[in-house]
Each structure stands twice: as structure tokens, then as C-alpha cells.
Image 1 (cartoon, helix red, strand yellow):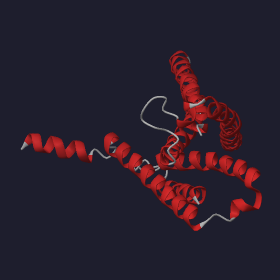
Image 2 (cartoon, chains in turn yellow, cyan):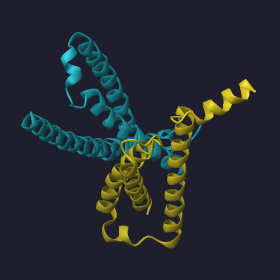
Image 3 (cartoon, helix red, strand yellow):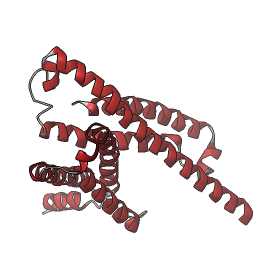
Length: 106
Length: 131
């Protein structure tokens, strides 16, 4: 479940990045690296887990699924949080800088 | 148990290599002005792709380990490192799963290099055909 959610997040963020590339200043590339990197790593994790559990891997209990769902959503939230912090700190459109300097002028 | 440590270590090594390559490339550009005319992406930029994949993945995987209680904010930081039996299991997992992750991410990066090389080559051929 976590792998699936992360993979969907990677595909969506890549589509958004591609749609706005190359002029976009929104730094959506950060999201692509985060979600693709983790998707690849969780894929390896899933392969090893499958080798150990065999068919049982595809039959998780509802409690396990719920936990994985929460984890997947939390991972996406954390990824988005990292992205927004990087975006605001780098401030590519100088929105924050302009706002602060305007205040100084007044 | 701690598979993300393997990829995080690779990310650190790749970062060091990237900084060195970038430094050399900057020196080369200063020495040879013709390099600036090349439309090829610098190697340092391509190494950055691998670093970003490794760092991004390791970061979110570390969060997963915190979620599962495998990483704790007190010594020895990894719950599996508390006793010898679990420690052995952890090292085995780091080598197997972590090694697999390192291999897959590096292989995907290799594929990205191959595709970008083909695109760059096609672009150069188109440029020379136009001239």
C-alpha cells in the first residue's frame, strides 16, 4: 500500500513537473526525486517481503492495510512538507523577499 | 530494520564525488572557453540526479523506520542494535535489502544516463545536419 501510494505520488509529481517544465519556478522536481527514490527502495523491500511471504504478501489483514495506508499518506504529507519548505526558503519568485523589503520601505 | 542506512551512506559518497566533479568542471570551463558552447549536460549535474534519488528515498525510508519504531531518538538509535542476535539480523538485512536498493537506484540512474546520452547525441546530429 505504501509503495502504491508513493508510486502514484511520483507519477503525479512527474506529470506536474513535465507540464510546467522548463520555465516553472515551483521546484516540483524536489517531489519527483523524493517519491521516485522512495518508490524504488520500497519496491526492493516489497520484492524481499514477497520472497519471504509468497502469496500471503498480497493478502494483508485490514489492520495492516490501514496502517500502511496511514503510513503512505504520512509519507506523501512529509514529502509535500519538505517541498513547501524548500520552495519558501529558496523563494524563486522573490515573493517573500519583496514582501519583507516592502515592509521595510514602509 | 535499517536498510536506509546503506543508501544514505551511498548518498554521502555520491555527494563527495559530485562536489569534486563539479569543482573540476568549473576549472575546466575557465580554462577552455569552448566547453561553454557544448549543449551536453555536465557530468556533475548527472551525478546530482543519483544523489537526489538516494537522498530522497533514504529520507522517506528513514521516516518509515521511525513509524515502525525501528529508529528511536536515544542510544543506540536502532532498536535492533540493542542485542547481539537482532544486530546480526539487522546487518544481514542492511547488506541484502539495502544492497538491493543501492543496486536498483544506481541501475535506474545508469538507464537515465543512457537515455540522456542518446538524446544529447540525437540533438548534436540534428545541429550538425542544420549547419
